[in-house]
Image (cartoon, rainbow, N blue to C red):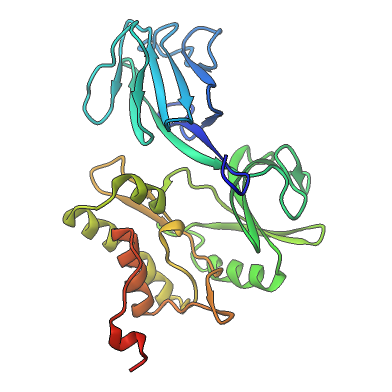
Length: 313
């Protein structure tokens, strides 16, 4: 448990197949049973390549690792190395961000982590509540002094969405209008609409199940030159689109960049936020600020200034 009440949960995300993008969170010591039989928690009933009782996945928060106990006849593999996990032996510990493949079915699961925030936020919403009778709050994705982002289920369309609550109606309006320029962009988070619930303004937007670059950086450390170049080019393509639409205010930060490394080349989705400010003014998306954020994104460090600049000379 962190000082602010946040708790680190294990998260299992389905990457392929009929349950693609489904997520199951585990508290420390909790387990998920995977297989074809009805006694499992994650059931792949029609997947012949999955054993009836395939494996058990347990989250251990004390050492920040998953335990995977394989009881299958078709095997469980690490996706990156194709290495078979031992069968009917003690559970193998795997670090977060590991992808495992289940049998010969083509099903892949990502083992990752999320932070669980205190259930009730400043606007009184908590998991299980509904917004405007349509959006069911599933969990809190991010929380800042002036905003909260929720992972919700849209009851009408039957799909997951992200909903951001604002303390300040004007900021919600500006951010929504900026996002509206990119409703069909493949590399910028799309907006679906703006709603008012009680005294709070909300933006309803695309839910991205990919990992944040900030979280990836914590696990990767340094990034190789070729990979850094590919990621940088993706981010600059997004920023170029913003400038072409005249959007010059916002934040490009590792915590606003979603990244998918499943394929040979990285895929990036940028969330255009207005929250970071200097002297009450949203930071400008000029080349200097972009350079500073890219430096931080690809090194995990803040940019530095020379003594001359620090003295203002």
